[in-house]
Image 1 (cartoon, rainbow, N blue to C red):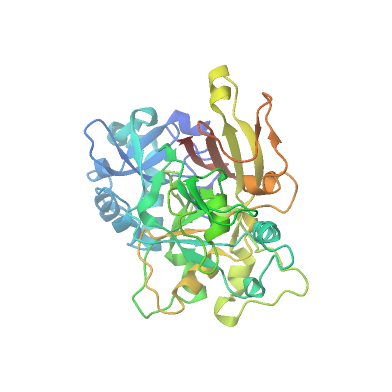
Image 2: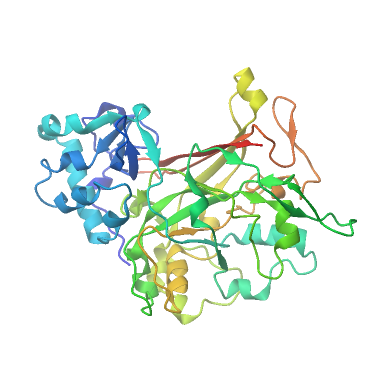
Length: 431
């Protein structure tokens, strides 16, 4: 794994796209990728730059080298073919776009490819063949374990194995799509038999989405030292959870209906190249914890494998929106709450010979900071539903009600570098 800074990370660089120079998420140092459509309905790849979207296929005659094949690959309804070209191709596209957007001499040729962001429709960035949700947030795992297994909250395999389960790729939706409250079986402790009906303990989970770039062949594991080159970038992920369904069904095989009804991702994919300035060391394991097994241990990954990305989650109830009230922040925390690095997740997922594919989604699991105010879910904030959360307008919540909108944001900032953001991941609950 090589972390290199280049001219695209220059904090003093300015774009001739004026809105990029004051945008909190999408300055020219970011250039995240996504799939959009305009009134004609044609889906294709684009890049967020300020409050505009750059139409990548429209640059086919402008980029003559160092990105030409990439913009042609972006003329598709998903980014799968583009990211499958590999890390070097992604870097070449980024540097070419940075030059086009900072050099005034290219303005005449590039400006016609810019479209106001508020006039486009965003779509899932990938055709997601497979979705795996990990459980890397050790503070969340401990908190949830205490609720379900008070005497044994963290199972002994947790510190040896990156725990995960295979989720449902068909129900992944882009930010803005409503979430229908799921139904299923639940059983309260004093009941003899379960009952069926809508979930009464609907929850969000503050996660990050790790997108697989170039895949691997079946039977050919990805070594830990090469794993990061197979990551295309990250987005925000809200893996909605029905806690009452989960409590009844999760043993012996883990999550099922409690998790398969909907997962929401933000539309923009922030690339690993854009995130290079915000790489930090993986937090040291607590004293007494075992070291990762050799196939999961790489010195460079431990030194630079974590991301200094801050996450926030807000709620906006129907009553708040009617009154014009601003969304209320419920919690915030860092992506460094991951017990395992992104590279470790990729290496472990493939170690048995599993073939990862471009566009596969790996969820981090809920990232709770371990500090008060850093809880990544309502079940933690409300202490299992026992302590209602009071909102500024006097409403209370233990779990989500119909009409509630959950909004997640994330960003990276560091002295000496431009702040970059991941945009928003949001959805409204409907009955």
